[in-house]
Amino acid sequence: MNLHDLFAIPVHRTPSKPALRYVTEEGASSDLTYAALFAEADRLAAGFRARGVKKGDRVAFFVSNRPEFVTAYLAVIR
Image (cartoon, one colour):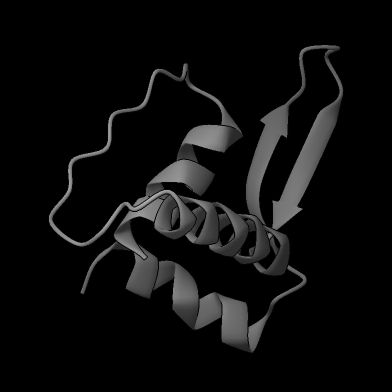
């Protein structure tokens, strides 16, 4: 079981619950639901596949500690 599998459990049970809570650059608090997180990860994974990224390839991120890192990580392990 990996992180993707762990996130997949609540996405089916409670898709509208917050998966991530974070503070935006403007200082506002924001949530990303499990459904939204998986939808974004799926879109990014499709983009990776369209650009030829396949199982076994290495993908590097240059992202600070932001919600986009979680989305990108889930997309890659997808």
